[in-house]
Length: 310
Image (cartoon, helix red, strand yellow):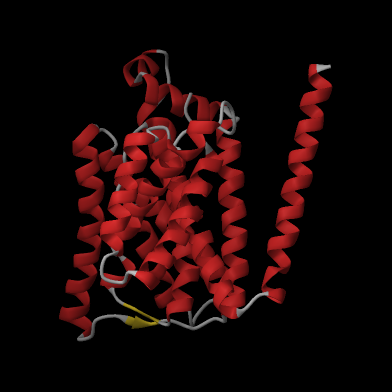
């Protein structure tokens, strides 16, 4: 009976997911262009939050390098946008971000705690300032033009990247790789002693998470037309995924999505209604969530779900 119930539950979840995909795929036909852009932003934040949690959720290493990989994808789009088809540019943005994260991971993932947090944030700032220096010194201009793409195309690309990120996050939780990452988060020394290649596992997870960030940056750049280092490597892209994951519930994949959706809506409402005070209100809401909902919104009411950490 238990097996039958489990199978039935999986079938219902699969059917529900297929229905949601169909609805999201046809949504641009029935809604205003502004709502297409808004939904694209929600997909972006969900991708960044889930990508961040692929690495930081199970390992409990807090990374602030999201802006580095997202910004790398943006600059890849600006450089290669005229030379390659859009799908190749997006893929290149993901791959180059993956390689960058792999290198940064090898250099930093022997550090722990506050040292790792600081180094990841500094990595993002270092890349931003290097590009700023290069453009000032050698090109004589700051920023680049990006090949523009219509908002509906960007929407569908972000939808696909979101589904890929969701599939990767869910798959990792069901594999030995995910189990190894969770064991690292629980007791890293013990994991090392039982034969797990701790450093390589962390580096791979870090690089996989960066792939989706870079791909999302590459497609989002086409919506902005013009970019510069301050836009591409905005520190908010490092902090917002962390806040959204905490708000929704770090231990649950659907918590990441809930946190990203709620924060995206809050950001839109607060910027519109309180343009000079929205960051203050954001901070108050976040502090209240941490104090009263330490496990996040989903963690408060969910006894099970798609967990990333035990």
